[in-house]
Length: 484
Ligand SMILES: Cc1cc2nc3c(=O)[nH]c(=O)nc-3n(C[C@H](O)[C@H](O)[C@H](O)COP(=O)(O)OP(=O)(O)OC[C@H]3O[C@@H](n4cnc5c(N)ncnc54)[C@H](O)[C@@H]3O)c2cc1C
Image (spheres, rainbow, N blue to C red):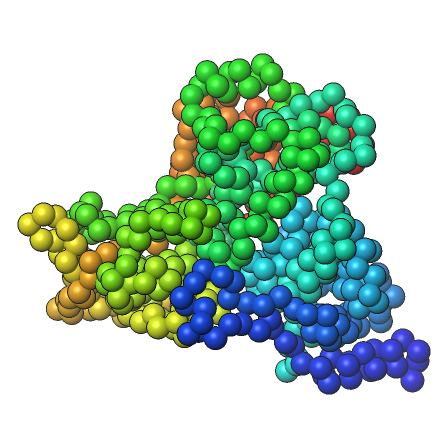
């Protein structure tokens, strides 16, 4: 047997011997009474075991290619150097692993917790196709970074880079804005970030619940960025054309990362009644409660129905449980297999007592004389043959109306873009749905204005927003004639 082939066989044995392990989670009975994280971080032994399973792709080895081209890497929107930092972690070289993982990613410890890894890097992992399962890449990524922070290592925000004299305004502090600011700071560019909320982080802070990611983890990044010289302007809503005119005069470039904030309606009768909420109203309210330790609990002892089947619906049902609702149901018009949200989150919700009403479409809100919610009239649905988009066609079953009792209805049906009046002032073209039009460099129709994240793509992922922010930053840096 050749040297390369025997290397492959021995590595193969290792990943078959040690199976995929995912982070352990707290018991449902314990976790559903507070907002603390569901999952434990990997400990040293778990991280070592999982990183020892990376085979750096036998295909790469056989072809003599470098692991730069491994499949986990191509599955990652940021093209992180995954096999290299896994190798460094396995060798106990946390400093090297930290530098490698932060080189391409603006906040790897965060994405290690919230990316849908099985659809991205772990879905690409060569050994995911075997019975032993993929390497648990996300959990290793969070582990190695948290270890590095404990050792006192601080991410690179250009602390030692000479200032370039160039100045950029970043509108929005979500993952897109955070990422753009990170790479600009590294190049010595001065950054002024404008955020309409009272805290930075966008949906990482006020959307995704604390039981998925701790808020300190997000805010810690902003502390580092501010220490490195970034000016963060909170409670600063850029909504007037005059503000944009001033920005265009003052800054060398502008990055727009405003997200997709407008929650969609269900087009039901009586949808405007008291007790019907948009999902973000509830999630933001709950996150503020985590910070402030006190908030008016509007769901306590209520019968709650969440309409929708995506990740924000799962976050809403699990938040309702923690806000001590009397009962929590999720009404979704398809079935578990056809839910857009992650199966892992649905299972977590079921373990916490959430009841799923599948094949259920809402029709009308039942209200009392004061226009308060008393119930929901629904219809049964059925799935037919797959349509042109590959999804099975949905139809309403005749004479199938039924009522569900409830006091609160939460709409979790997706988000639309918001077209600001200043887009035309700045000569930024927007599409039919209010999304900003950009080219491959994330440049808008105004050469000095860039955009990325949900404000461009519509509701997507933190990692794709991070990639957009990075692409924009690199092109701004190129325009300034600065080296990367
Ligand atoms: C409930 C929920 C759960 C999610 N869970 C996950 C998950 O588990 N994993 C994952 O990868 N993705 C998840 N996502 C998606 C992810 O959060 C988004 O794709 C990502 O945050 C988009 O980043 P962004 O920077 O484009 O926008 P946002 O995060 O929306 O940030 C935009 C920021 O801009 C600010 N802003 C807007 N307009 C202005 C203005 N005119 N002036 C000043 N500031 C302004 C906003 O206040 C906000 O802070 C989730 C989304 C939701 C709603």
